[in-house]
Each structure stands twice: as C-alpha cells, then as structure tokens.
Image 1: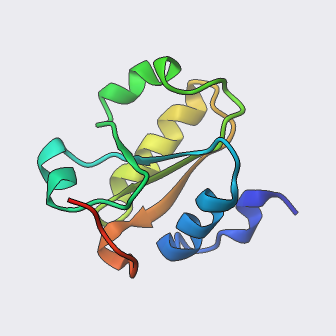
Image 2: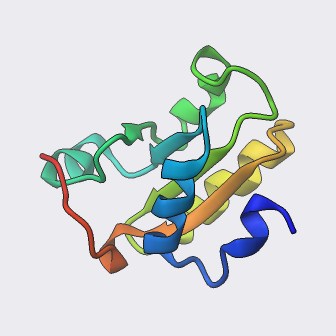
Length: 106
C-alpha cells in the first residue's frame, strides 16, 4: 500500500497529516493570491494553476510528493491531473480548505 492509497475521498485533514509525515513533500494551495491571503494551511505555498507550469523551479524532481488543495477540491484535482500529465508521479489533490479543521495562517 502506497502513501496515497491511505488518502480516500479527498479528506483534507488526512491529506495534511500525510503531507506532514512525508519528508521533502510540498503542500500547494492552488487558489488565487487573494484567497490565499484570507487564510491558508501553515507550511503551504501558493501557486495558481498557471504558475504550476513552472513547478520545476520549486520541485526537486518528478518523484517529489505534491499535496494540492483549493477551496472545495475541483481546482486542486485539475491541478493534480495537469502535474501528472507533466510527469509528476506523486501529485495528489487532498480536497478543499473549506473542509479543513486545523489552524489557518494569514
């Protein structure tokens, strides 16, 4: 069973826990800069879907674990698909911050 096999149904709380245990992983918020400024998960970086085209400037390789979230999960699912098409094997949508129960940073 792989790391991502434990994540079922885009449970963002479980996804954040997996991110925290995954050495060298990135937590990526794919919402707009304005949405990100209103509150985001600590440790996340903000990259819009357009900015994801430059992921190679941030990711250390196509095997790096990339955990993506947005508001409800649709944009992050699209972003994960886009990254997989670009060769990033471990890109996964963990859902939307709207369902997150942890603390937020502003």
